[in-house]
Image (cartoon, rainbow, N blue to C red; front, side, top):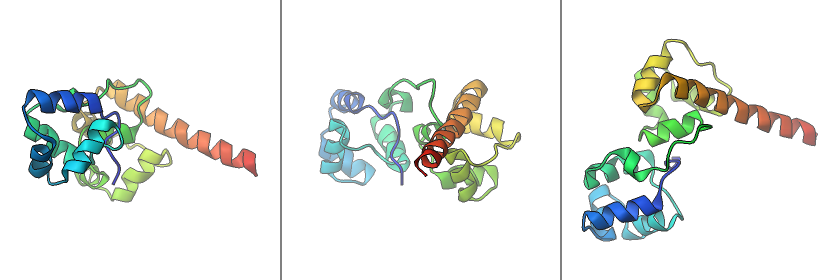
Length: 152
């Protein structure tokens, strides 16, 4: 499972300190180990979407408080993980298979018109940001494709 992109270790340390919780307290509350929480706080790892959701619930703060500002060139996978969702969660909301979401995030799947509003609400971003993220995902795929083609 992918980690939440744009996760801020410094913001987690600050939020934990403000809540007067130890790494052990956080670990026990979210279902992981104190060592894992330590890796999150040092930037050597980041929580999965599931653990990220548990983390913000334990700290009682909005998701955005543990994230770096959203980059203009953020891709669809970034939007999904920032929202604390797995591909399976998004697939269920859209009534499709998780592989459809994987292809969409890899830049090889087609964005259906009817998905726009659901994704906009699920990811809590503007429609314009959603369109930019879709374009960024496609651009990343194109760059990988071109790089592989140039090697052969």
